[in-house]
Amino acid sequence: MASPLQPHGALSRGAFAVAVLISLAVLFAPPSDVPPSPYGIDKLVHGLLFAVLALTGRWAGVGRGGLAGLLVLYAAVSEIIQSTDLVNRNGSVADLVADVTGVLVGLLVWERSVRRRRASV
Image (cartoon, rainbow, N blue to C red; front, side):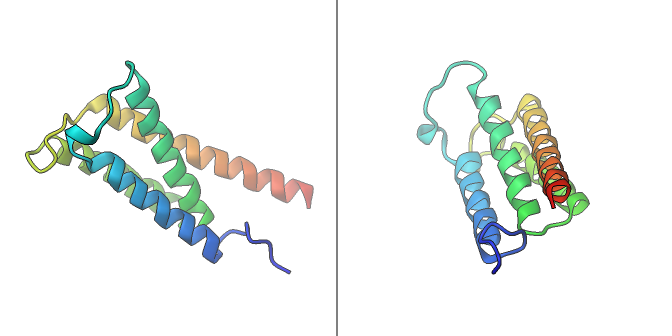
């Protein structure tokens, strides 16, 4: 019997879809919906958000290179859009760096978990 946590299953694709929806809400919420936070928390949120996108994307079966490229592009475009009148927030190179760092961390965590799983079999 297959585990519900197996890669490429319905649960993994659903988790990735939910992560994408949450990222849209977090990245493109109007300024009035963004709660105040201590300095640096914003960067932590960006990093965690993109790490979760990378992890769930790999779990859903998206290839590493394609996923990394698309997430970095998504991060860059989100920062540009945040700077426009569409969202009216502040785009930031520091946020982009946090996003890319999150992607790299998520991909590394996924690769380590796969290696551990293979080593234990």
